[in-house]
Length: 155
Image 1 (cartoon, one colour):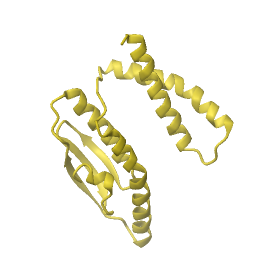
Image 2 (cartoon, one colour):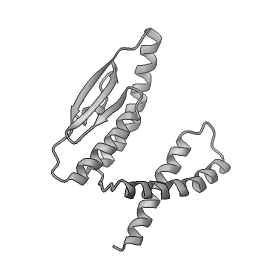
Image 3 (spheres, helix red, strand yellow):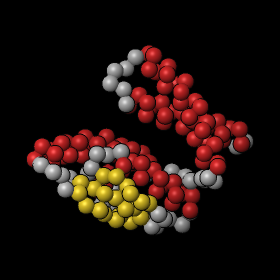
């Protein structure tokens, strides 16, 4: 594939993610918001590619990306309910946890998996990734029931 096609595909990917992120934060949906998301995501998508190239980022997403993203909505709902319930009962208790990532020989795939997993796990109300390296993740988790998403990573 030519470099221009690769760049166009990457920028379109960034654009789609950014538009969806914008739309996910809305309390009411309108045509103006869709237009604003579409227009403002373009320079941000370009900046995402330029930034990735500046840091020489060359990562690939994990093979189980569909399973990971499919488990996210359920984890968000489950964690939201658990966090609200814990807050209603009193001060929620949290702890630090270290989770190992599966061994991966390809450095690009390992970095891509760590980046995606960091973002997805931090998107849930019950956990935030504090540090990620080649071997695992350091997370702060609230005392909430284990979700399918967390079980996928040995949490």
